[in-house]
Length: 102
Image (cartoon, one colour):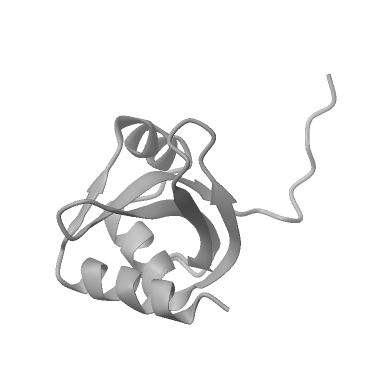
């Protein structure tokens, strides 16, 4: 459905035309992921959801793909100005992980 957007994201990753927000970097590190995991996620993944940013009214995309270790991650990104991909956040996707109860 969003094939053209995903192709563009992959092209920008291959050309190192992306930036990561401070929040994205913090979340990446919190889940023990690296920049190469984020790149691999986008290069191997698929768009699983499109969302409208409430504040800026721009489209952002959730891409689920593989990490280098063989797990999965979700990268939230948007196509930004000046021919750049903006990586908003990233997190490990652990669908079978049991949530702690409060």
